[in-house]
Length: 46
Image (cartoon, rainbow, N blue to C red; front, side):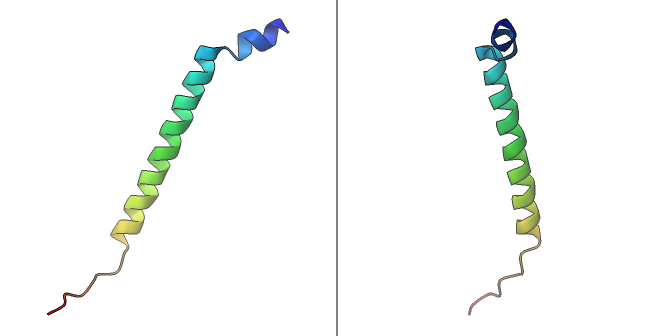
């Protein structure tokens, strides 16, 4: 049981959450930028 407490401390879980959120949001922004750049041009309406 002692190894569980040393492996999953509250500080380590917060760091893991922050790193995973950073990776997920950076991936989301990367794909969003790619989709925005590859979008077809919208013709102007007169």
